[in-house]
Image 1 (cartoon, rainbow, N blue to C red):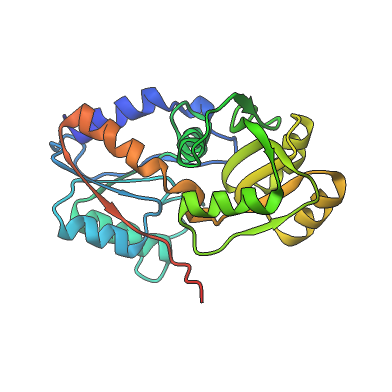
Image 2: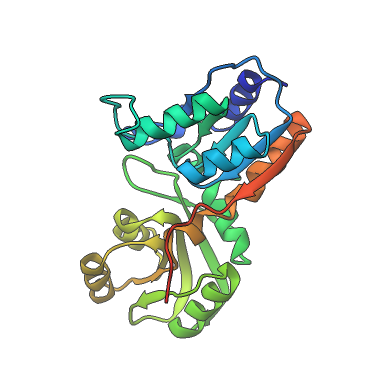
Length: 254
């Protein structure tokens, strides 16, 4: 399968119609779309290190969640961050594909992978006007104290720290990987008593606790990274390629 064919297959599974209007993802960069795919690198981010690691390991494709080109490029030079990354990828002959909010919303994507990593089963979707099916709803078999449930999330995701706020026991959980602060009140409207996300922000978390919904913040990277294994499985089935992983998380915790 060629690079172009791989993108078309993934684009069919996770079409742009699922993306938020403000998003920019898809076929980010490719100098030789008809090149055969034998190795794929999976990473959450198209960082300098991820691109270089893909090149050093003979990967034709770097497949990421976060887009390489999110904002319009004003120049492609080594002096601009996005330009520097683009030049590195072109020189290394590494194609970059990114599936962002469409992968959040799509079946088997970020939020389904997160639900599975937490050991739960999705009971449905929720969202806001711009992304009505992006989040997932989970119903627990038994009510749990918030502190115990937060400890469960931390253990399942292997994150080094977790933040939580709220006053309610946990029974109906909304799940949004990454930056889910905008989905706190849609989650409350959907009947959730708790939102699990990567990061949400101090002020809205404070307000949410008083408004009746717990917020658990497990870290942006840790709530999105579970999808990489699913993407690797898809790539193997489509291409027979070897799949490698790169940890692009830059956040360190003391």
